[in-house]
Image (tube, rainbow, N blue to C red):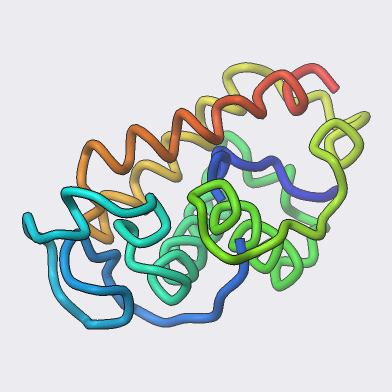
Length: 160
C-alpha cells in the first residue's frame, strides 16, 4: 500500500532530506531564523515561508512517524516503503507550496485505489500533519494554506 497523502500532505506535501530543524516563518530560506514576523512571513511563496526544502523534509519526517504510530491509520502504512513515501511527500508538498520540486509519484487516485480510505482516515492523517506542523512552529496562516492545498486531494484518496 502506498501513501495516504497528503494531506495534505496533503497540499502537503515535495523532496528533501533533513533532521530536527524547525520550519521558519521569517528570514531567508536556509538562514536558520526562528519563528517570527519577518519579511518571509509577510510575503514570498509558501515554500519560502515554510523554510524551504530542509524544513519541509523535517516536517515530513515527523509526520511519517506520527501516521505510522497512529492506531487509527497506521495499518495503511504497514507495508509501505517509508523512504519512498517520505521522498514523495516532500516532493508533493514542495511543489504544492510553490517550491522548485516536481512530484514524481503516481496520481493520488491510482496510488490509493483499493485501499478503502474513509473520511475519518483522511481526517486522522490531517490531524497528524497538523501536529507535525505545530511541532515545527509553522505559523497558523501557513499551516491553514498548506492543509487547504492538500485537502484538494481528498476526492482522489477517500473511497478509492
